[in-house]
Image (cartoon, rainbow, N blue to C red; front, side, top):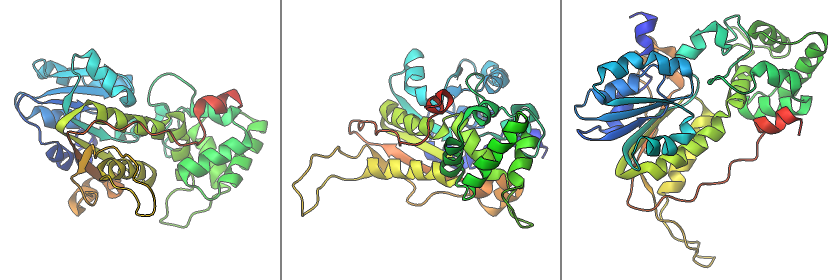
Length: 331
């Protein structure tokens, strides 16, 4: 199978769509359209309709052929998946039967050198999933050393974050850091790796990508939006690729599925009824065959849940971590 064909098969795609259990007449949201793999699989069930969302204009334009073949059952919208409730409302749907999300950068984006996501491909230091807002090069140029260290530590879980930040600030005084190769070389002088381990720049690139695209805030907001739009019995399926994402999904579902009841040491506190019933007591992971065909599947985890009759919970406050707007304003 060539790489182009592989791109159309999302990691854990079959399992995720099975969790959705598409049915004739159902309305489904493919919240991270990408190459259209989930949408294509859902549309294989006769009578389904799909709203595909992606902030990447290139992904949307690449899906027009599938729109043409769908007989009006697929609608594509260029937007952030955190806005999925508003997108559904604009398409005339206040409630839907299923939402599927594939969180993080897509293989298509990683494979395009000019998008600047990969340290393995020489390209401009961009990393934006959409086509607006600051680039990774802008963040590298303007963020303080302390902010850079926090970003790299929190979003990349890089234990050498202070050393990396110090090296970046020293290097940018000599010349602007504008390419993936330049940044990777700077990081590699600080972070050492043994043969067979991940590239020294892996965690720093991950951190910048997550930060530039506000990915974790987006995920928090998208999960709450899915909770609001799913019908009772509607299903949510989320595939994530690293621990930060998976932790957010796990904690969201556990909290939403928690039954009421206070501590025996404290007065009873009113608690929202469970809005989800968890379908995956443990996350679903890829088998050896899928990992062999697509090594990226090794870290993938699928979690799914079914919406109950209860009202949606109030959205939680976003974590107090570095925010793109504040860092770029120098505040």
